[in-house]
Amino acid sequence: MLLIECPYCGVERPELEFRCGGEAHIARPEDPSGKTDEEWAEFLYMRTNTKGVYAERWRHIHGCGRFFNAVRDTVSDKFLKIYKAGEPMPDLASLAKEAGK
Amino acid sequence: MANPLYQPDAAEEPVLSLPAISMLKAAPLGRFSFRGRKAAQDAAAKALGFDLPQQPLTAAESSGKAALWLGPDEWLLLAPEDDTEALQAAMTQAIGDAPHALVDISHRQEALIVTGDKAEWLLNSGIPIDLDVSAFPVGMVTRTLFHKAPVMLWRIGDDSFVVEAWGSFMDYVAGLLAEPATELQAA
Ligand SMILES: [Zn+2]
Image 1 (cartoon, protein in one colour):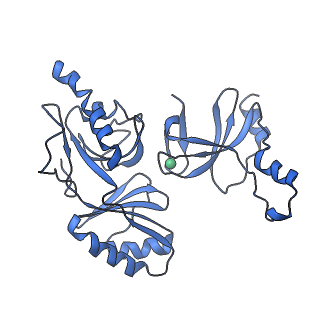
Image 2: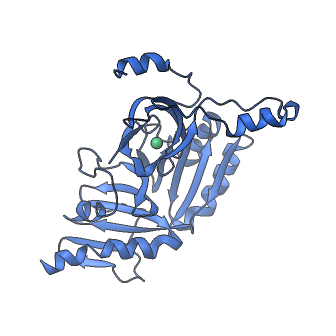
Image 3: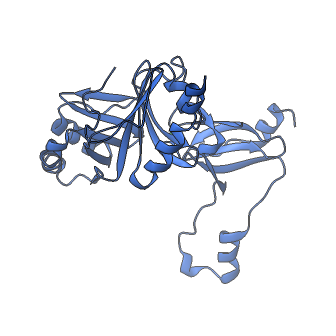
C-alpha cells in the first residue's frame, strides 16, 4: 500500500486515509466579478495535468483532516516533497533532477 | 488496564468475551469537539485545569477529564457524563469572545473498549496502520478508518484500546470487529 507522510501528524499513513485535491497553488482571483467567462473557466477547470513532477493538494481526511501540499511524480507515484499549506511551491525542476528525471 | 473515563456499560451484553479478547460497549460520557487558535486554547486550558496537548497524536488527562489531539487546532474533550453541562458553561465563560468552536458531541459517537492479548490483531483486521506498541505507543490517539467507517482509536494500555465510531456506524464496526474473533474460537 502507498504510504504518505502527513506534515501535521508527522507520521506515514496508508493512502486510504488521504484524498487528492488536484493541482496546488491555484490562486482564486481576487476580483471574480471582474473576470471574463473565459478567464473564470480557466481558473475553475484548466489544469497543467503534468506527466511527471507535479505539485498537488492533499487532505488527510481520515486523520487530522488538514490540507497540505505535496510534489508527486505522476509516473512512478513517488512523493518527492511534502509541505504544509501556505508554504511556497518548491522548485519542481530541481526536485525532478534529484529524482533522476 | 482501564481508563477512568471509559467504563463498561453495565446495561449492555459484552460484544466479545474470550480468553484472548474482550470487547465491551462503554457507558455514556461527555464529549466535546473543540477548535480554536492560541487565545481560545489558553482559555480552554484554564477551564479544563490542564494544557491541551500540542504534540500530534497525544492525549492529556487530569482530574477525570481528557483532551485528545485530533488536528493542529482540534481536540476531543472528554468528561464524565454528569460534568458535561458544567464543563460547557466553564469553557464558554473562560473563552469569551475568542473565536472558537465548542460542540457537544456526547451522543454523536459511541465507544468500544477492546482489551486482550489479541486486541492489536483484532483491530488490524480492519485498521490499516501499524499498531505495534513501538509504532503506536500507549497514550497515542488518532482518527483513521476501520474498513469503510471513520473511527477514532486511543491506546489506553499495552493491550487495551478505545474505538469510537459515530452512532450510526457502531453496528457495522462492532459487527465486523467480532467476526475475526470466530477464528480464535475455532482454534
Ligand atoms: Zn494528519
